[in-house]
Amino acid sequence: MIILGVDPGTATMGYGVLESVGNRYRALTHGVLETPKTTPPHERLLRLYRGLRELVETYQPDTLATEQLLFSTNRRTAIQVARAAGIALLVAAEAGIEWCDYTPLQVKQAVTGYGSAEKPQVQTMVQRLLSLATPPTPDDAADALAVAICHAHHTGILQAIRR
Image 1 (cartoon, one colour):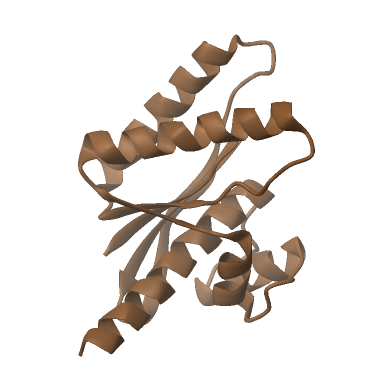
Image 2: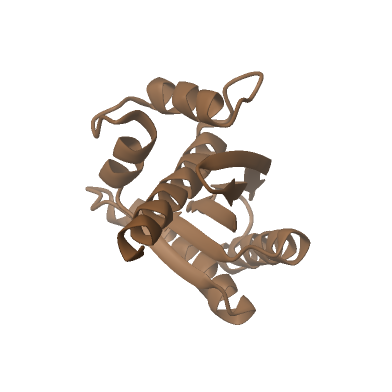
């Protein structure tokens, strides 16, 4: 199974593509899609859309998984992140692939076993679980890989229950 994990954001959208075979995982790629702050909002969303479409076309994921937006005290930021998440959902729907989303708590628990883990702990565990030479950077890419790992864990648990 190929999973495209996405950490939504308008300025920086993290992505991580993970191959899951049984209980083994392999990172195929990870990084960020960035848009300059000076670019008009509709053009930023178009760039994110094109970047995610290219990833879907290249890696042909079975699932696109995102991290849920937490309520933010800054409504403007929350709206921008929600728009970026909407682009990810659109790409999944257009490609006809499954979409799932997970809370930050679920992601941290799946990767570290601790729902209040800090970002460096998540990065270190992602590095270990994927046998990477160094922790994935930037944070947004590490978070996207963590989302993909979370989905792989949940899928594995559901498959085990069905047996």
